[in-house]
Length: 77
Image: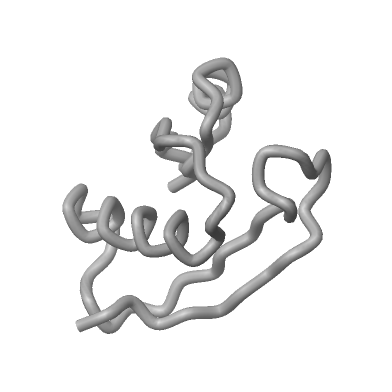
């Protein structure tokens, strides 16, 4: 699953094997974006509460050009 603010980026990700892209609302709050992605994962049945996921991001959101943040997180019950 890939969450992005940009439709063009999401369209390009469609070509990546195993990636389901979602366009989400722009935000500068990293935790809010992570929570939104967690909800999408569960709603779309790509993961279940309690699953461990790896989150990669470029910070600051919307400005970074490269990945500079990696987080391992358990989805909320």
